[in-house]
Image (cartoon, rainbow, N blue to C red; front, side, top):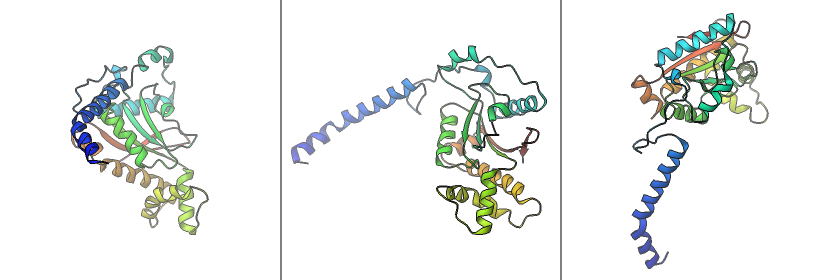
Length: 245
């Protein structure tokens, strides 16, 4: 860059910076959420009944699971929910669930559209993308509860156990699952009881701890009691969700 261009660039930097700041804030307003210190107010929640405390949110999940297990499930008015939900969302809980096709958090907790913010990955572990998603849920959507939901007979955990015990490498990208689930498997190697069941529970516990320790958004919200983080295991045989801890 020549001396004159460098001079002009330095001269106009404040204007460009202000313009970029304005575009950033305008974009945030268009998306319907507020950036810290932006001055833009969030829209009214489309589902006011979802504005609850962390403890109340957990009760909603527990009661929903009881309906799911015992029946009948609540009749959800999907048609009349569509219009309000075009304006935004305010889920009362974020769920980190396994990608297993037999696990469906919306069914398991008898929840409607806009109630649950669900992240799913085989082995229900918190990677960077899941953490970023939950940071969004907490900071932008004001979601008061996070749950790590494991399940019985988890194939991802079982495959990780076999890979570690046999010293074999799974094909394709599957080793990334073993890397993520491995700490739970190794932690229960010498425990009594069924190793798969123990590893499934330990995997949930470790990922709850990981989320709780994640800075700067989740740990701050936890310290301020704006959010609660819990672990649970889904039973395939009866649909019941068992809270851990």
